[in-house]
Image (spheres, rainbow, N blue to C red):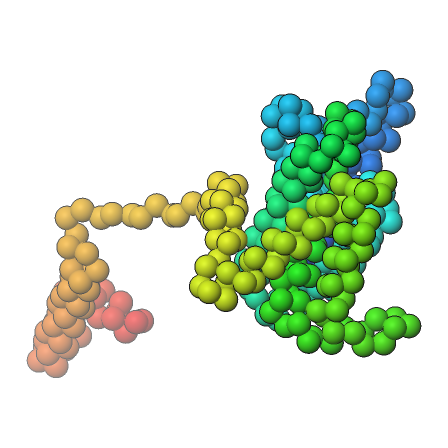
Length: 299
C-alpha cells in the first residue's frame, strides 16, 4: 500500500499541470464518495446534506454563508460519468493548451474559468425571472466551466488546429468550440440550466484570457500569485546546517600556515639528526634523536 501511495505521489509531482488537476479532481471525488458511504453505514441523518456546503448555491444569501464554494464547486462531481467526461476533456485539451500557453496559464485559467462560470450562474438565476422559483434549492458542481475555458482559449489562439473525432473524422478546433457553445446556448433553459450557463461563463473567460494575453495582459497573473503564495506556506523548507565558527584560529589560511610551519620544523630537525649521524655515528645520537629518526623512517 505504501508503494502505491509513493508511486501516485511521484507521478503527481512529475506530471503536467493538467495531470495534476485530474489527480486532484479524482482524489476529491473518491474522498467525497467514501465519506458518503461511511455516513450512510452509520445511518447519519441527511448523509448528503453536508455536500451542499461545498457546492455553489444560486442564492446570494446562502453564498454569503459559504463563499469558499466558489472555489470548491469546480472540483466536485455528481457521479462517475460526470467526472469521467470532464477529466477526458481536461486530458485532451489540456495537452493541446500547453502547446500554445504555459503550465501556469493553464492552472490560472482553470480557476478563472470556474470563477467566471460560477458568477454567471448566480447572476443569471437572480436576474432572469424564469429561474427565480429555483434559487433557494439550486446548487452547482463540476469542472465543466473550467474545462470550457481551456477549450475556448485554445480555439481562439489556434482556430484551425485539427481535432480527430471518432466516427466524425477531423474537425477544426474553432468549429468544435462553436458547436459546444452553441449547444449550451440552446440548452440554457433545460433541466441542467445552471451547468450550461456556467459553461458559457467559462468559455467567455477563456476567450477574454487569450485575447488579452495577445495584448500583453495576463488575466491569470493575480490567481497564480495567490496560488504561489498559498503553496509557499505549506512547502517544506529544509533546515540549513549550522555553520561552525572558530574564533582565534585565523581561518583556513591560518591553519595552512601553521601546518606548513610544523612540517618545516620537523624536516629541519631530521636534517640536523642525519648530519650528526654522519659525524658521530649511530651511537652518538641521544635516545630522543634515535626515536625521532625512527618515527621519520615510518612516514
